[in-house]
Image 1 (cartoon, rainbow, N blue to C red):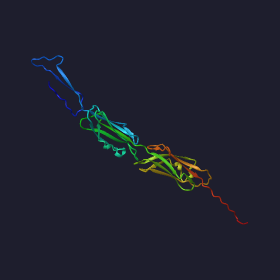
Image 2: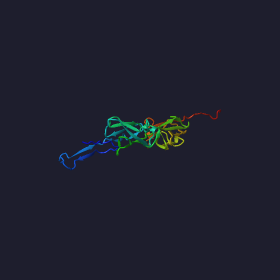
Image 3: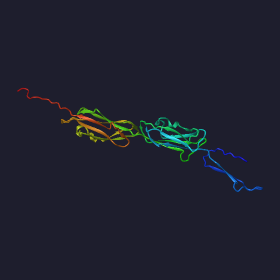
Image 4: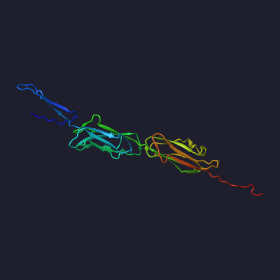
Length: 281
């Protein structure tokens, strides 16, 4: 007899064979049915891959699960090295994903997981990427097709609301302010579309409020305002209204509870006087 011992190498390979065949020699004949024998050497280095579910997630929409898989089990733990990278930053998540630099398979487990949770911040940003790549290590090989995975973190859209102060104003009593508010800031301007309506007319104001069909948030501002000024006219009228309603546009959503604001314009009450001429007769 003789013995051979397969050893562990650092490669993930297909199963391989080793064949010994009896060759011709002196003073013996070769068995026609058993003249050779073959050993199949099974590779024991696991191939490790990584995936994410989902691969796209909005801020505040819930956790994302990263799953690392191996195609061979073991009787001992296996530590896999990870390399996180991307355009996101630690504060984009409930805990720092860049601190995750390894994952461990316990015993005979074929998968191991970790989760990260994108959180809502106060900024309007482009979509950002977070990538985890499997880094080289001991006792495993990298999957050629799934050695890294990227998560696309999408920004949630700002909600726009509108309010008016005061809600009633008499003709000639001063200006009225309509304030638009957004719950997220940005590094760029944001134009919000408006629809003016009501029982008032342009002549009821110092300038035509019906010509105002949009408002612009500048840079990182969270509010922008519109002012209107009811003026005294020569008519005795019922109270009238002016309403601004936010209408759909790009890169914002409308507050379901505060998507419009209404001003009531109170007619200026005339002062009546009497006199007589001459006062004596």
